[in-house]
Length: 584
Image 1: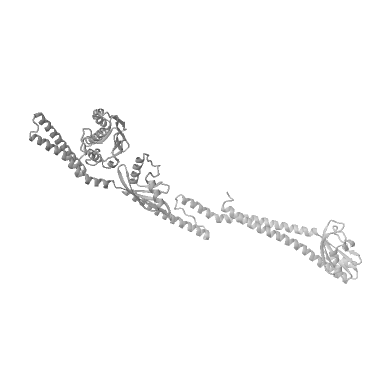
Image 2: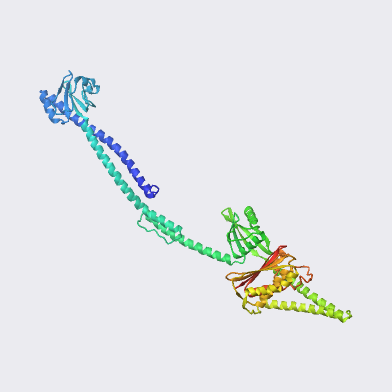
């Protein structure tokens, strides 16, 4: 609105100020000119009365003196000579508005009678007797015990005052009009640069830092415009510096191997990097919640650690285990001066270090155990044959069959170790070819139709593929799926199910193998792809759970050689899910 703008405020202020000054000045001028006109008229009439009194004193013919006095007075006034014996003499006058004075009325006017009592000049404004005319009367004494009175109607004085009042009001009106024009002109000149500065400030808020305010004057407003332009340049410089610092900080955080999480006091996650996202995803899975990009609330136990950091205002170190992986978290409070506004947490995945330690501890024991059993059996049964413990040929053939099976088992173990070593050293070459993905999986599942029925396990297949072919080494990938599906069937109780789901995105071929088996203990999940890993720690060799413990390690190397990834999720007594992703 106009009244709220700087132009309106400044113009109204100037107008009100000038109007107030003109109002006071008009009142004073009116009062001054009113008294001035009255005083001038009284002064002029008193001079005339003095002249008349001297003429009467010096003249022997009173009638002639009055006629001469009529010539020197104003045409609008009348002369009356009053003697102490009550006689009044007046000169002929053409003024018809004023009546002659009455001697009784004069004697009743004490103010006028002072001219006889004290012999001094008098003046008074009064109403002429027998008339409604307001008049001004002055009197001066004469030596012949009398006084000269000159009186004049106030209409002339009032008319003069009215004309003066019109002139004063006209001048005041012209002054107000000129002041209004000047106020709008001045306020517009002053506020025009300010309006441009406001527009430039709005441009700055929109990020247009190249905006400049034109410098039209060299006064304070011009200096303000120069300071504004300098501020815009400095702001652009600092914003660019902050942007570069932010990009540099973001690049550093994103490239860190450790996870970084920034949280506010409410537990909302403000900044995370990819390792931290993986850590948070596993915590959500552990808590049974579904993570999403809009979900910024920190999961447990981050919230509890954050509250402890805010309450104690000190750094805290915690070890967190989830899905078989172990992280060490260091959470440090962030301050806004003396107020704790949040915390930053650095998360390091220590699973690999723990895994390597476990591998060093278990490798010799695993290899020695896997080789000791068949060697012991070979030694024992061969000694039985040599010592003729087996008397019949049938018993000898049975012992020889056992020795043959154990030797084959040792051969498979050695071959798998050699294959695994070649894969890890990068010496294995893939024979990739175009394969119909749907028929490929269907053929593999047919192999397990019999074993699944024997174990009373329901084998489910779901095909959501919208592609026809994939480029893979069919023999190697068949080895992977055979191992995983066989494991799923063998570790699933009766009436359970194994579901194989195939789907794809624009860039990946995804296969999920889910079972409803006994699951994998949380502490063993990080080690399922290691050599000699077995879910059965007792190492009891049953037909259902036999194996060397190298299948998953080989499967992982085959998938990674294809450029893909394999992951596992498992909950005790709920089942296990293997997820394979092969790039298209």
